[in-house]
Image 1 (cartoon, rainbow, N blue to C red):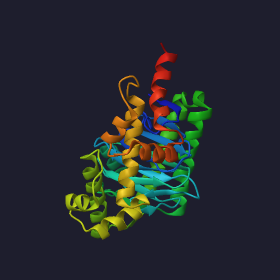
Image 2 (image 1 turned 135 degrees about the vertical axis):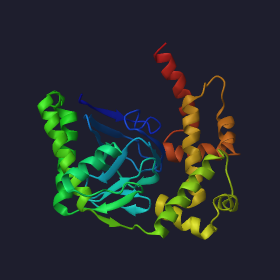
Image 3 (image 1 turned 90 degrees about the horizontal axis):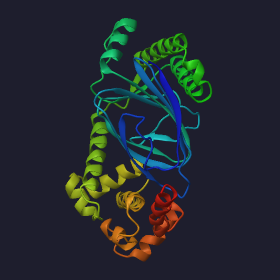
Length: 319
């Protein structure tokens, strides 16, 4: 059965809702109103998404183990940075099941995502190309210009149909033809894609950044750089270099940014009659509520008290 639709998000804490089988640890990085639209189609053998975002952010993404994911930019001037590498139009990232990785945008961007079961993809590749496709590790692939263009064209077409002509997608013959075209284009692109950066050093860098996220997640309060480096097992100079490439900032700047975003989520969920801004600030490693309010306002465009009171106004509206 074909299912499809389009959803708009104005809050990074809800993005991407329950649409994508993955967990997005998303942190906004600039005082730009977050806005995103996700168009999606669920076909019998695959799911696809067209995602348009209009604010810079960093995301630490954890994929499910039940599907293979293929991600790629959909715009010529892509600002999509995956694990420290800026992706060019036509590049494909074939993610291993359960992959954990960083994805960053510096400005608004459009990107695509395809989900397919590992067994289905292996079967299609074996049938159409008579080869076996290795899926045990994440790969950056660069297909031929012709095959990548065909896949991107179909992905964009599917996204437009989901937004503008859902009635057409409801016709069984249309959705079946679209799925067959998409599968053929995906298999062809993956089959002739040339692997990029499959080195042990690159894999080690990605593993260190995952350990960095785990170390941050173990403590909601602030941590010193020596403590972080000791937990991860790398020198400070190494961690600084990796964070600059992956996150666009230093380790402590990112840790602070992450805590600010977590504090915002806490304020949005808290009862304003039973919670104070100072309490939330301290629980996320900010010992001085006044300084916390200042950096919070510069990032989110409002003082933390306004965020806390928003829950009360929403509750009153629906009472």
